Amino acid sequence: MSVTVRIPTQLRTFTEGASEVEASGATIGDLVTELGRRHPGITERIVDEAGALRRFVNIYLDEEDVRFLKNLETEVPEGAKVSIIPAVAGG
Amino acid sequence: MANFRELLKQLKQEIDEPTAEVVRARLEAGEPLRLLDVREDDEVAGGILPGAAHLSRAHFESRIEDVVPDKNSEVVVYCASGVRSVFSAKTLKDLGYTNVSSMAGGFNRWRDLGFDFSVPRMLDASERERYARHIILPQVGEEGQLKLLDSKVLVIGAGGLGSPALLYLAAAGVGTIGIIDNDVVDDSNLQRQVIHSTDRIGVLKAESAKQTIKGINPDVNVEIHAFRLDASNVTEVISQYDVIVDGTDNFDTRYIVNDAAVPLGKPVIHGSIFRFEGMVSTFVPGDGPCYRCLYPEAPPPELAPSCSEAGVLGVLPGIVGSLQANEALKLLIGYGDPLVGRLLTFDAQSTRFAEVKVRKDPHCSVCGDVQVPETVPAAAPATV
Image (cartoon, rainbow over all chains, first blue to last red; front, side, top):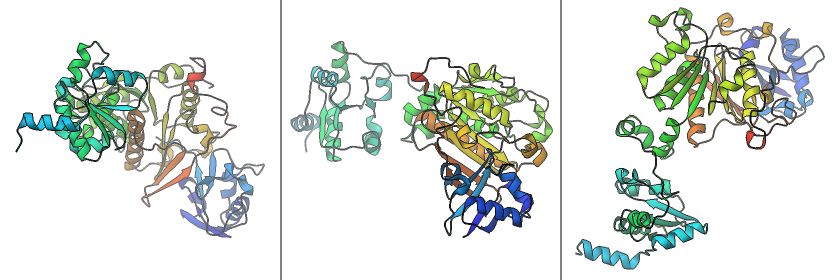
């Protein structure tokens, strides 16, 4: 499934500044792996050494936080919009 | 053409006129009567029936549908002696209200019988002038403005987000505004921290903010807390306020505030920014998720560059901090739909807002098993 993935400012150094990229994968985990293949270094910022989603990075399938679905196992339907939204602290 | 007395007599045949004794007995029996006081402001200042809505005759027709939206509810209108209320009751009938009466003898009879009434806190003439554009909004009104004047808001950080939030909360008439900041104004702040000015470089930010606030609205009581929030002082500080606006610039403080606010039942309005992007959400303990439900842990420092390292567009905190003020006003007055369970994101480069859901995490280390303070012993310790 090819979907649009919204890339936050912090990770755009890995996407040549692009705020949205196309990626395909059956699950959110597959998408993250695919993103890493195209944009080396980005995966490590999203998942930890054990391959789990980092606790300060949220991934949304449309409006839903995948931690409240099936985490990285969440299936990605065609045409879905995936957004990566990490915590920021600036004020 | 009927004269005044003839018209009154005619209307009195058409409108029910229960006595004050009957109205009181029915209220005490718990019957759902809507009391509507149609006297002028200066008369109401001397006392109003408990639970009555006030709508003077000057704005009666234009505002009645906001005050009493349900045309089938039972409305008992009263004035001082029971004359004006007959005319107002007739107007209500003409507007389609189906169950309307006028209390005989009005407020004077009620008071002479020794029945309870309350003396409402009223806006004075200068307040009425200053807040005229608020008062005319049905969602705010005089009652909402009085709530603001009685409310206490703590703004954490008098920086990028705190500047617009403080300016608008002060202008809106929030009665007490607390400012936590132990930093001084630096020239690199002035590109976005619009509550400060060039002549205040080197001045404590909280003090500089207070001076600006006093210039906008001298009636605001400003409390300065010129220290850094930590686990030892957070509970004492935030327990003094109704709503917390979080505009700090670091994760440590954000988690300290969240973890103390949840057991105290204090709403926290979160705003955070990075370069061109910002986010806002409203965390109301017991009513929705908390910041730890959204992000269980802070990133390590090497993955979380600050604004001084990464830069920030000056107008971005202006937008995000204003949204935080908007959330605070809704919570304080009690209208609208706050960002509870919703995270609003803003991208200044594309000028796009987006919204995602924030779920309450049943396993959240802070709010997972916590109940709101009504059912928890007072002074529950902050879990910092």
